[in-house]
Length: 198
Image 1: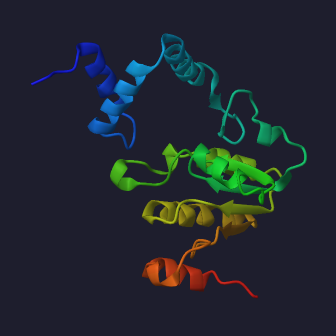
Image 2: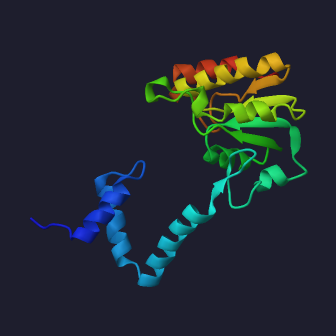
């Protein structure tokens, strides 16, 4: 039976550590790297090193950035009275793609998950509470609509509401282009609950 060389096996093992990458996909990636020219492989390795060396968290919103504060926090045209709370930096990117939101963000760095040992002190809730003293009128909670995301949203709402700040939650429901017959009961219930006047 043919065996991978030690260096290829190490590469497969490293790729296998990436989220969502199984051994077969890791092997395909390793063989792709083998086919690359040396200069292309160096560009890939340099890109990885640059991310590790240059990217940091914004000291204000905790989004990823290469300069502190980040471009969103520095943008004077953004509405500073609204903060959208998200779980991870990738959520900021998703919301920014809509070109609909012009406020600021706050990245929690995860969600409450007692089974994983993640409690309120493991998230950036203290930093959020500090930011709310800066004339914030509304906090939009944009955590994922799963058990952990909902628990985090409820926890945040209980912390923020006593401050007299409006707390809203992003709407949930049927995706654009979706068909009702294929939607699950929870999605349909959320769509009905979150309906708006026409």
